[in-house]
Length: 284
Image 1 (cartoon, rainbow, N blue to C red):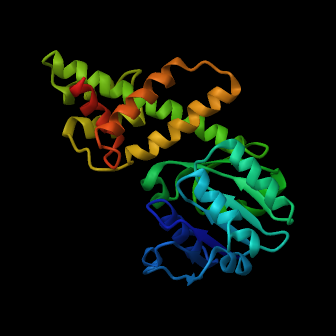
Image 2 (cartoon, rainbow, N blue to C red):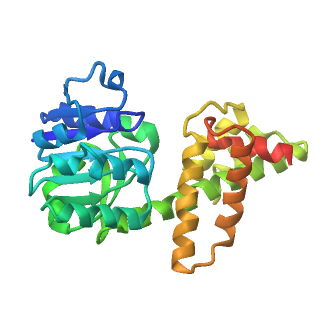
Image 3 (cartoon, rainbow, N blue to C red):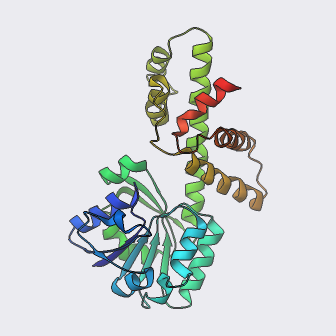
């Protein structure tokens, strides 16, 4: 297939490479053309030009506004994609924005899946992402061979926007777990107990988790260089809390975690790893 990719960052670039290695013809567009250096791909001048070339286009960008601009803005995908083509948005954005973009594209006969992913940069490199898809089941089946290049768990969650709701739930649980690990490490250190030994002990019990293994190790080694930039989790939690507000759902734990992320950003640590929540506790 002729496949387009927009968003060649730590997630998008390895994802695009997996698609290309599977034998598909790759087209890319990037705000920073240097991001495409070394890719065996055709570099397009605009999203519209990319859309004219491709049967399926993937977007992996940061925010709701970014997806809207790429899909619907001047020289955007909607100006180039043909009826019957598919946009697969793997970004993490607001569910209502995903629905709005899908409706606008549908007016031109263009299908869309909101298909956010979980697994981080390593999951993208290993093609082991979890993919949460919202949209029509028939559209998902059309692009499933491409998604199979990217992940090991592909779940059709429901209609348009449902994938983004699932991703909000994922981020809610994951970042709350990071906060819990940070508080555990803070308590251990304040009690004069070796944090590494506490982590080792917890890993064999009911508190064991991937978050404890990965984020706990970063806290123990005090390696706060960005694995997952805290600013991205801060953005995601804004989406979580807005979804809760719209739905009238009480989420007291998420509200507290959101405040901790706000405080972390105020410290200027937005481009450091979210394990910096430990450092924040040490200042409070």
